[in-house]
Structure formats: structure tokens, C-alpha cells
Figure 1 (cartoon, rainbow, N blue to C red):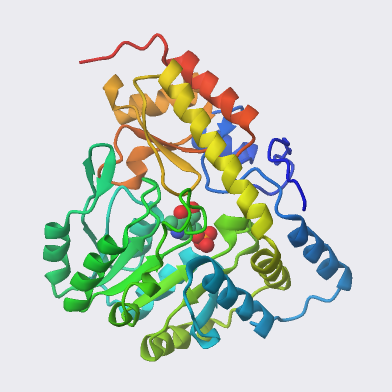
Figure 2 (figure 1 turned 135 degrees about the vertical axis):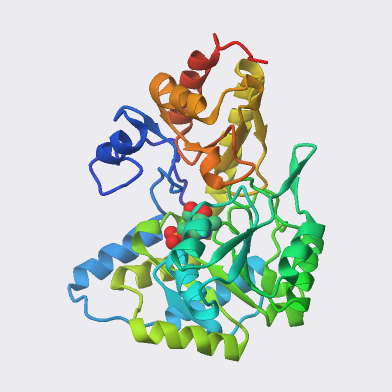
Length: 397
Ligand SMILES: Cc1ncc(COP(=O)(O)O)c(C=O)c1O
């Protein structure tokens, strides 16, 4: 067994990391000395089998056109079977170089300009951009906060789904940034409303392996046969195994007709996994589980650390404890600062690069999202900076 050291601090500023790029930090946060805890990738080295596979592939020395090999597809099939108990067929899997590209292709394929796509804010902000950049309209059903937990407003959801212009639903499952793992009942209810109203469910399950309570995640593909047939399930090893820079995602579509439509779109663009994406996915899914189990323990430790730190030193900041993802959603509402003032506090005083809550849409105001997939010492340093910056801030009423 390999014992991974997630405490190791690795300098990423000399690589092509957008999160750590001094230029991007300066452009986005006015200061290049911010501690970067924004973009959702991890500051941890990947599992050793992935590194070995990439080195070996690099040493082969020929990087011609690739394809979705049987080994590449089997890795996804077996992963879904082992982790989610979902039996899928190889033929159901389409390749895209990321879920953002996939969502764009999906909107282009299944919507006409002016059509509506349901989202539930606060949510991963590129959803809104993708919808609008493709000439469509956002049909927002904001989540409801109930006793520190986010829930779905089903009445409003149904009303929006009934609109004949509503064609798709971007389901974020688990939900970034609020960290909810939707229950089977919630998924079923959303799915049934969509089925009844001819709305295709696009389940973005990119965070589904990063779940803190074992077996709590249920893939939309397993809820019910008729719901599965009206869905597209977007998966990827990128968040799970820290491979975002290798651009690999697997779009699972059980319905032949729906799949054929998207396949037609993808065929015209002619994209296949790169040589490195292929070997990384295969190694990650086939040999990465040991690393993942250790990662989840470390992330849980970071989460506990944040919780304790806030309770002791920043009790006015409330953390909505995530059930999944390495992103924590922090409520600064008690300070009653405007979004711009809160942003200024983070950028100019705390020097911590977090994501402003308002960019995630309605309901995100006065929140900040922190990416805690970093060595604990870095997390501690960032939290100390927050503490120092906020300790003399009066609560404004
Ligand atoms: C919900 C969600 N979907 C998609 C992505 C990005 O996917 P990709 O890098 O595969 O385009 C992210 C990244 O943070 C995300 O949180």
C-alpha cells in the first residue's frame, strides 16, 4: 500500500496552473500574493499509478491521433459499476474534453435560440454563461435554505418545467457550491416533473466521487428506467483524481435516439481523447481507488479543521457543511456587508483568493466559496488571514 502525503506543499506557480498563475491572481484579485483557494482543482499530487502511466506513455514518444479504446471505455463501465452500482454499456459513452464543452454541445444540439434551461442557483456559474452564450434563456429555480440545508422549491420547479419553451434541466449533482448530495426521493421528484413536461435532464455528476458519507450519492442513471431514458449523465475523472488539465470527460446516454443526436454533433467536430487523457483515465479508474480513499479522509480532516476554526475564531461566519465536494460555502451575512465591500475585504485585507458568492447567482450574495483541497498548513494560513481581517469588523445592522 502507498501512503500518500497530502501535507506536502508543492509549488504550482511555475507550472501552467490558472489557479496559481500570478498574472491571473493579479487580474482577478488585484494582488499576486493572495493565497489561491478559488478555481476547483486540488493542490495535491495525483495517484502514483497515474504518474507512472503518463511517464511510460511519454517515453513511448509517438503521439498520433487517439481513439476511445476498449480499455478507456471499460475503465468507465467498471468505475460506474464499482462505485455507483450502475451497469452501463460501453456504447452509451461519448467522449468530450470536459463537461463545460459537453454542456455547450448539448445546448446547441437540443435547444433553439430562445428556449429555456432550468438551473437552481446558487450554482456553478458557467451554467448561466453556457445557456446565454447559446442564445437561450435561464429558467431559474433558486434553492431554498432551510435550517442550514438547501432544498428544492418543487412547486416553482414544476411551474417552470411546464413552460413549453423549457427544454433542458442542468442538474448539478452533487451541487456546487452548496455541497448537497441529492437524495433518491429528490432526484425522483425532479425527474418525474421533467419527464411529464418533456424536459431532458442533464445530470452533471462531476463531483460524485467526492462524497463524505459512503454510498450517499445516487446517480441519476439509477433512479428509474423511464427517467434514465430521458437523461444525459455527465461524468469525469477530473475532479476526483485532479486531472482537469488533461481534459477528459465521459457523457453517458442510455437512450439511443438522444445519443445519436449528440453523437452527430460531436462527429462534426471530430474530438477524441488525447494520448495523455487516455492513459490518465485508465490508470485513475483502474488503479486510483487507494489514493481516493486516502484523499477523502484528508479532505474530511480539512473540513473538520475549518468547522472548528470558525467556531473558535470566526463565529459570525457560518459554514454550510458540504456533503460532497472540496468546496465550502461560507455565509458572511452576519457582517451585513455589501458584496463589493465583502469582496474588497477578501482582496485587499485578507489576501485570500476565494470565489465571491454572488457570481453563483441569486442566493449567493454575501457568501464566499473556499476550495479546501490543499495542505492543511495552507488552509490554516488562509483562515488565520481571514480571522485577522475580520476581528475588528463591527456587525453592521
Ligand atoms: C459542477 C461542475 N461542472 C463542470 C465543471 C468543469 O468541468 P470540466 O473541467 O470538465 O469542463 C466544474 C468545475 O468546477 C463543476 O464544478
